[in-house]
Each structure stands twice: as C-alpha cells, then as structure tokens.
Amino acid sequence: MKEKIRIAAGQGFWGDLPDAPVRQVQGGALDYLMLDYLAEVTMSIMQKQKARDPNAGYARDFVPLMKQILPACVERDIKVVANAGGVNVPGCATAVRNVAQELGLGGKVKIGIVTGDDILDRIDDLLNRGVELRNLDTDEPLATVRDRIQSANAYLGAAPIVEALNRGANVVITGRSTDTGLTLGPMIHEFGWAADDWDKLSSGTIAGHIIECGAQCSGGNCQYEWQSIPDLADVGFPIAEASPDGTFVITKHEGTGGRVNVPSIKEQLLYEMGDPHAYITPDCVADFTTIRLADDGRDRVRVCGIKGRPATDSLKVSISFSAGFKAVGTLVYAWPDAYAKAKAADQILRSRLDRLGLKFDQVLTEFVGANATHGPLAGEPSPDLAEVQLRVGVRGDDRAAIERFTKEIAPLVLTGPPAVTGFAGGRPKVEEIVAYWPALIPKSEIVSHVEVLET
Image (cartoon, rainbow, N blue to C red; front, top):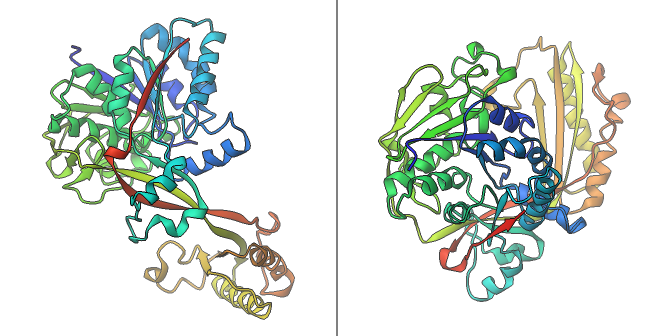
C-alpha cells in the first residue's frame, strides 16, 4: 500500500480553464487527475446534443485534452478519473480509445466505463410502480411534468469507479457520478478502505468536496483578503495528498499562483452546504462539524478528525424538464439621473406590453449598478451614479408573446428617456428554459455497470 497518493483537480465544471489539466500534469508529481465536468443542468444540454447527433452527448473538450496529456499520463502512470461521459459514456470512451490509438498507445491504455445512472427510458416504469420521484423542494410528484422531461440521472457513488480501477483501468469515464466520488474512488482503490469504514469514507468525501470546484479552494472566487492573493492569472489548481488513515493535505504545485490556506478551504467547505452535520452522498453521511484544519506550511492545509455515518438507502436523481421560454433585454442609461431614467424606461416598457395584451408568467426588472445584487437591502442609490443598466426579463409558455417582447426593447432608444446606449447587440434571443427537478430514488432501483475497454 502506498503511504500517500496525490489526486489533482483539473476542472471544476464544463467550461473551466482549458489548460488547467495540462498544467496539473506538467507541474509535478501526481497519481490521479480528477476532472469534474457536470453541473446539475449540464446533463440536459448533453441530452439535447445527443438528440441532434447520436455520437454527441459528452464533454467534447475532454477528448482533445486527452490527446494532449495521455502520453505523459501513461509514461508517469497518472490515472484519469472524469465524469466527462455525460449521457453518452460509451461514445466518449470510444473517442478516447481512438485518440490512444492515434498516439500509438494501443495496448497501454485501459478505459473504464461506468454507466447505469441514466434512467430516462425507465421513467414510465418507475412511475407505474409507484416510485413517484417527488420534487425535494416542492414535494410535487414527477408525473406533473412527465411530458416535458429531458434528462434523468441518478448520482452514482465511488463504488463503480473503484471497480474500474481494480480491473486495471487507467482512464475512468463516468456519467452522472457524484463530484466527491471522483476523488473518493481512487482513495478506496489505493488504501483498501472497507465499505463500512464511515470515518475514512467521509474523509475522502470531504477531500473530494474541497477540490471538486477546482481553483475555488486555491484562491479563485475567494473573499478572504482577495486583494493580496498572488498571481490569479496563473492560479494553481488544488491537489489532495491523501494518506491511508484518512487524513489529507490540500496543496497545489509549487510556483503557481493563487493561495491555499485555512480561510480558502473554509470558504469552499461552505459551498453548497445544507446541514453541516449530515452531508449526504451515496457512499456515506459526512459530518462537517468534525473537520479540523491546520496550516501545514506554505500553500498547505492539513485536514483531519473527520467523522462519518452509514449511507442512506436512497440516491439523489437529477431530472431536467422544459419549463417554457424566456428572453432578457438590456439598455444602459447614463448620468445625470441614470437610475431615474432606467426606472422610467421600465415603466414605459411595461405599459406597452400591457397595451399589446401580452401575458407572461413573470416580468423581472433589475437595475444593474444600483440594486440588482442586493435588492431592497441596497437602499436608495446615489443620484450621481455614472450609469445604470436596465435589464428586463420575461418568461412564459407562449413563445409568440416572448418573441413580441424582444421587439419592444430597442424602440426605447428613440421613444424613451434620453442618454441611452448598450443596444448594439440587437434584439434579445428567445431561449428555452430548462428547469431542475431534484428527487430521491431507492438504491435498489439503480444498478451500475462497469466495463473496461482495451485499446
């Protein structure tokens, strides 16, 4: 058993810094590269792409990235674990296998494929058998939006990733696995942690939680003394140095920008936090109140003392559904009386929409630069504001009404308050709204599948 393994994070979401994984591989010693591509609504985007092209539906950036880093990963035995597969894990794996063969690495790369999370084709069967998949926020049964569902995926835990690694995979591609499982899986594989060693499983889960958002724990988006965080232009992504006893250190490659210290880790720990006593994952229930943090040198924070409890009998399901249409238009009003002009323009626009008889589920106005972020808490803005952006959005099921709204923004330039700009972008676009439906499903309903593809 290794005394320590280094797991690096290379992506915090699909669209993160493209060269971050390359810099992680080139920057120093690693055992694993973890890449998290999937936000809650990303699966619906991928499902749409797959509907248009059966070969699509995964994180396209992942394949050219592997072309860049795969030779070094093979040479230095760096294993890659990524949820880049989206809704087409086999397609993604095939594309990576083709890359390996193009690079002359045939026979040197084994690709683990983790599936079983996609339950879109099983929705009717589940509903017919009484699995209601009620919305965790509203308690509504899923049947109320059945005809508008676009994607449905259960969050798999670390176990299938461990199986793929145990079977020799050096690249593991999953669909909707938990972000934390991408980091926990390598730890279980390397250290042989038991399935009921809740404290260690919770430690690995919290390590995964800390690095799952990439540089957000190493200086990016950090409020604490943000002005003094060095060289964010070259921010270093985090690395978890894990030990068999469950303790770990968060650090980054030497010579990179950003900062890893106790405040930066604390800020990330609070990200997406619900009940700090019960951070529920498929693998365990971690107690964040037991976490102990200590400085361990420059850009190093030691994490220990973590306690955990048995996992629940349910898995979270991420469902997306079509919820109508929206359009958002903006104009900028300049000093003097910038805020008053923007408010007047908003009233004029609303009067015209009423005169046209247009109906919307919601009309939302924001005054960017005055109170868009803090709302009423911002108080009355200064009369000397240099400029205010008027941002008006509408949403509803009637696409024609939304289309008509888009034609009412630009006319304000010549038929509304003076000193306006910011209209060069033209009419706003009508966009489909994809809404998020979180639910729980009994674990007994989900069976993961692991395949190892030879190159």
